[in-house]
Length: 224
Ligand code: C5P
Image 1 (cartoon, protein in one colour):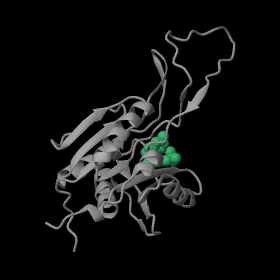
Image 2 (cartoon, rainbow, N blue to C red):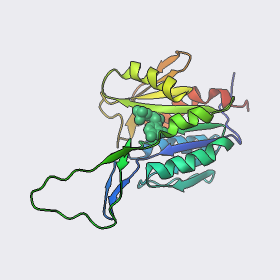
Image 3 (cartoon, rainbow, N blue to C red):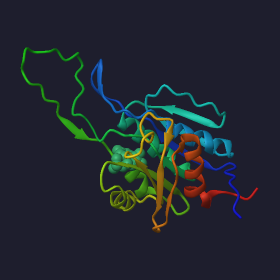
Image 4 (cartoon, rainbow, N blue to C red):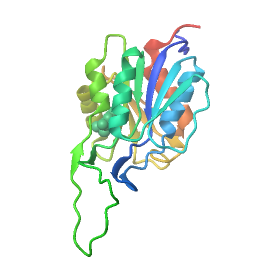
């Protein structure tokens, strides 16, 4: 049987939210805590991998000495870091909640309230990190993505595997109590590009990380 050892494997993990600046004191963000990504980084490191954790702003700390943490703020910064690091990696786990849009321009000055006038922000799309990695992925490299959907979860996740060239996608359920953003627990279903499907019970994010790695990084593991 295959071991669960990731000795010396190089694994990149993206985690947390991104902040898209509006002006010097405001941003567009989201409620991602980074907990799932940090749990994945810790579990990979404890199995012997050399982990690069590219994270947006979070209150978390990474404790394992084999985790190299790269702090970024915006989607563009995360994209630049990820594209540079990925060619040296055996796998990438894309668990960050990357903002789909950013303000077209950041105001150098704090935007002032002007009476009762409406205010519009013009937004432009951010680069898709996962899809870009999917395009430069070499044979032997794995990419694992996440999907958080409120409806048609499974068919959307299958579509996303193809669009982003993922090997596996982890489907978070928003319909279950205790799963998803901010919680310490998560309930996931993992789908593969070859139509395999495994559903797991509600568990702590560190136990979910074990299931994800056992399933999605299996072909990287070395017998110990
Ligand atoms: O398209 P959607 O945002 O639902 O896809 C989610 C997956 O794609 C996650 O793995 C997420 O980390 C990744 N993603 C990304 N860059 C983006 C948007 C999503 O890497 N700009």
